[in-house]
Image (cartoon, rainbow, N blue to C red):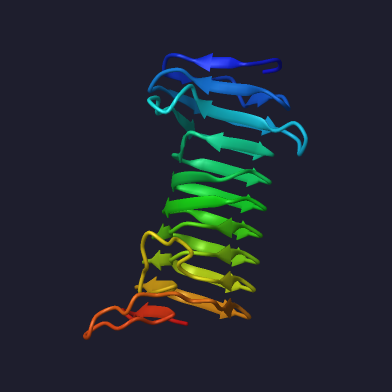
Length: 219
């Protein structure tokens, strides 16, 4: 794709390899529809690629089904990954629900809900709550977490040189900053925990900066 804008008016699936999208292209969702497939969206710092809804009554969805790369993109639509691999670099605030995907996300501002994923999450800023469930072989390095971070039933997870600030969202206060639930083989190296603002928790379950529900957890 080059030139723009392009409007997505019906559910659309790309085929025949990756759909290449040139810098500066705008893809606008005009209805509650999806654009699915494999994408190579290579924007630039001065000419990003934008995906967004026509107005606030529209809820479009961008779906990775194979192998996709997004570089310098603005992703103001619902975003899912249903398999394959997903690389996102230098991209603006976005929310991803990913399953069965090899993730490589860096230098971005994501909100992530991942299940059965692998990969590297590096040099990002997380403003909102994120959850990683049943993930394996994942590295979290040099990220800033400003809200609750949960991993559950995951294996071989490494947290290295991250900054956990915790609960920057004034609308809701968690009573954890970093929560490990039934994980195995977790390595925590040289992380920093600072500037906490947590609610009190409960008498039987008071607040903790790091919460560990130890059902076989190995740290």
